[in-house]
Image 1 (cartoon, rainbow, N blue to C red):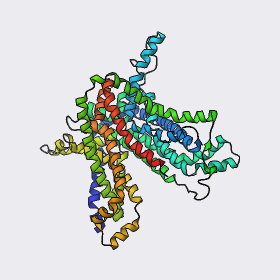
Image 2 (image 1 turned 30 degrees about the vertical axis):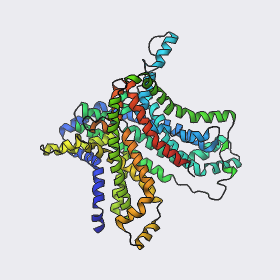
Image 3 (image 1 turned 90 degrees about the vertical axis):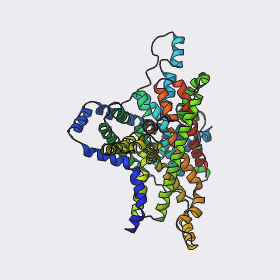
Image 4 (image 1 turned 180 degrees about the horizontal axis):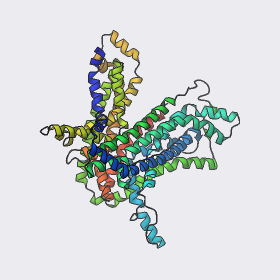
Length: 535
C-alpha cells in the first residue's frame, strides 16, 4: 500500500494523459435508440467508404514504404558505391517534410493550372488535362510513401548494420550468387525491422488529417472532423474515433511483436572489422542501379517538394504577409516551448520514479504514458472535448469549457497526451547509459532523493533531455489535427495557416510557413544523422 500511495501522483499523471481514450470508451455507455440509429445510418452510408479507403490506403502505403525503405537500406548497408556516405544521411531528409506540405507542393506544380501542365499544353498545342488529377487516393499513396519510408529505412538499416556483411560474405563463400544472398540472407534478417517500420508508417497514415482533407479522401480522420464540426454529431465522431483507435491498437501490437523479434547476437572479435565483412564494391551498371535506388526517394520526398514550394515563394516575394508571419511564428514557438518544457519535465519525473521505485504501479504509469504517441490527433481532440461537454451539461455555470477551448491549456494538454512518450523515450535512453552503481555510491555518501537526481543524474542526462525537448518542440510545430480545433482564439500557428491557405488555393502564400516548418524539421534529422555516424 505504501508503494501504491507513493506512486499515486504518477498514476494521476498517467490517467490525465489517457483521459481521451477513457472518455471515448465511456462514450459507448451513452448508446441509446437515437445513437444506435446514427450508428446504423453511418454503417449504411459513410462507414463502408471510410473502411475501404483507409484499408486501401494502408495496404498501398505499406507496400510502398516497405519496398522503398528496404531497397535504400540494403543499398547503403550491403554495397559500396560512389556517394554512399552522402546517401546514408540524405535518405533521412524526408523526415523533415510534413506529409501535408509534400501534398501541397505536388498539387501546386502538377495540377491543371500548374506550371508543368500549362507549359505542356502550350508546347504541344493540346487542350484539357495532360496528367490525371493528383488529388486522389493514388496521389495520397505517393505522398505518404516518400514522406514515411525513412521509418522503414532507419530500422532496417539498424538491423542490417551489425550482421549483414558477415553473413553475406559467408553465403558468398558457400557459393550463393548475389541475388540469392540478398533474397535469403539480407531480407529475412531485416524482416522484423521492416514490419516495425511499416507499422509506424501506417500509424502516421491513419493519424493524418492534412493530406486526407486536402485531397478529399474519405478516411477515418477526415470523417471524425466532418462528424464533429460539419454535422455537429459528437457521439458519431466518438464512435468513429473508437474504430480508428482500434486500428491503431492493432498496428501497435504488430509493431511491438516485430520489435520483440528484432534480437540478433553480435559477433565480436571475429572479423567484424576485416575486409571480408566490408560492403560489396559495385561498379558500372550495378552501381548506377543502386545509386538510383537511393537518389529517387530523396528526389521525390524532399528535393522536388522544396523546389516546388520555392517557385511560388520567390515569385510572390513582395506580396508575402511578413507582419502576420511573425505572429504565426510567435504563436507556434510559444506553444512548442510550453509543451516541450512540460513534456520533458513529465518525462524526467516518470523516468526517475521508474529508476527509484521499479514497482508495478510505476511501471504501469510509465507504460500508459508511453502509448500516447500512437493516438491520432483527431482521437485526442474528441476524447478531450467529450468530457468537457459532459461537464458543461451538468454544470452550465462552470468555466471549465473556457479554460480548455479559449486558452492554451487545452491544446497543451493535447500535446502532452501525444508527445510525452517522445520525450520519455529519449530520457529513458539516457538513463540506460547511467550505471546503477553510481546511485549506490551516491547513497553511501548520503545523497538520496531529489539531491541524487540533481547532483548525479542531471549532469549525465543533459544531452538526452535536450534531445527530448527538441523532438517535442519540432513535433508540436508540425502538429495539425489537434491544433486546428483546440488552438486559442487568434492564435493561428504555422501549421494551421499552411493548411488554411492551401485549402483556399493560396499556395503561393502557403509556401512561406510551409518551408519554415521544413527548416524546423531539419533539426532532429541533423541530430539523428550525427548519432548514426557515431561509432
